[in-house]
Image 1 (spheres, rainbow, N blue to C red):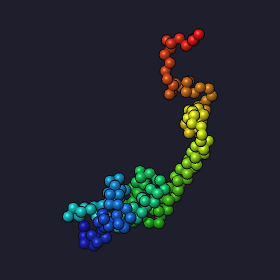
Image 2 (image 1 turned 60 degrees about the vertical axis):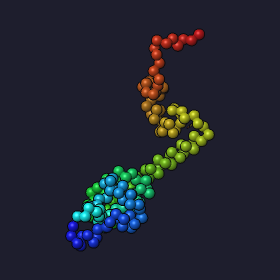
Image 3 (image 1 turned 135 degrees about the vertical axis):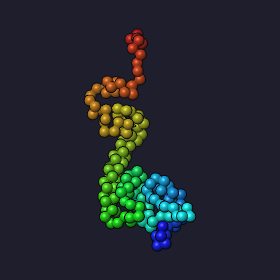
Image 4 (image 1 turned 90 degrees about the vertical axis):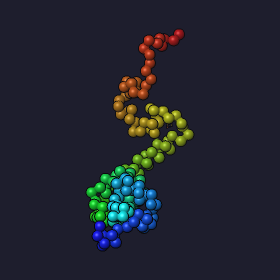
Length: 165
Ligand code: FES
């Protein structure tokens, strides 16, 4: 590492302070491959300044509930010494906006289903929309679908005589 490169490289404490996160979080992001540092000849971790924008993107994505694996995928092709620019940011936000809308729609649906369950408590696999979202069983055909397929149904011993009385 040359002298000029050393000047633009940041120590872990500085990255944490300037990003408003804990040092342990910096290490966590690095362990997850979201950011990368390098070692100085004195065996200390140093990070390129571009890490600050990467962390800002990671934090925003986390606030939006984007899974870290998805963030990792998005950042994967960006070299660690490349500062994400407006074009990169547009790409992330467009992709994540779609994901967010999908999640919001899913949550709205869940809220509505939950509302219909308030005060019920049956948790019926056939009737409860939370247990059978989108009437999954109904879409597989009419009749006792779980009995027909045998899934989740306790096996009845065929030798037992069910003709009681
Ligand atoms: S708990 Fe009864 S319908 Fe969901």
